[in-house]
Every structure is written in structure tokens, then in C-alpha cells.
Length: 102
Image (cartoon, rainbow, N blue to C red; front, top):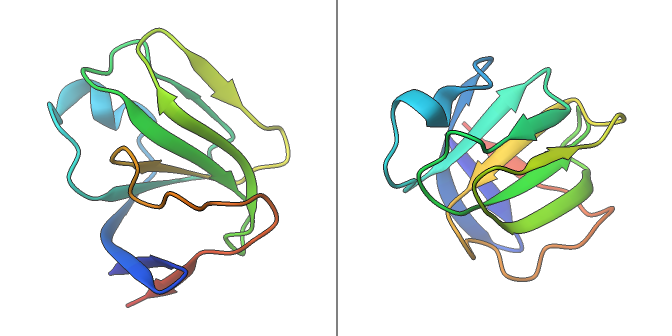
């Protein structure tokens, strides 16, 4: 599966596990979509990442670039949280959309 924004794409996986970064990843090389998630805590992260909150249609509602350890980010209107390696998409804008390609 691919996550696409402005003709740039990155491999992506889906999960419902909000603590996935805590257990598995020293370095993130692809996107992770956390479904049914409107807040993310980076307390156990081992790296800085970009965190995007979207609605069900992948409309970008909020962006947190270079989220460091011990930070909480939330958006009560979001239904998905997307974790990205730093600067994967440099030109992200609120109210624009990601596309998913199977």
C-alpha cells in the first residue's frame, strides 16, 4: 500500500496499536496509519517523526513536524493518525488530502 501526497509516495501500513513505535522501531522508514486514533504520545519514541491527524477521508486536520520525545499531540476531530519519517512530505497543508493506493 502507498500513501500519496502531491505525486510523492511512501509505503504505508495500517494498525490500531497506538503504542507501535514503543515496541518495534528504532528508525521509521515508512508511514504508519493508526486507525481510530485522535491523539498520539511520543513518550517512548526513540526518534523524531512527523505526525499528521486526518479525518476518515484522509483530509489533513493538523500537522506536528519533528515531534520529539515526551510530547502529546491531539485533535478531537481526527479519526486517523499518520506517523511519517522526518520531512517525507515537506509541503503538507491543512485541509488538503492524502491518497491511498492499494
